[in-house]
Length: 85
Image (cartoon, rainbow, N blue to C red; front, side):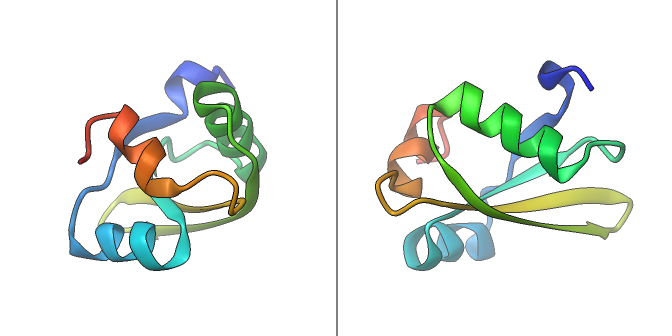
């Protein structure tokens, strides 16, 4: 899958903010056909980080990815790069 089409947009709600602050996780709405490997490659290449774990869920017709980063890469800092903060 084309990495440009994997990540659709970051989530910015209360839950996403809490996960960024407390669990070092980023939250994105992703393409429904993307795999965890596609998501991992896209995040690692776009933001130069190390991904430890990815959980996905399909809710209300959208696929959401919860991406846990290595502790060397603060999610708050990465989120500021794509304008969430």
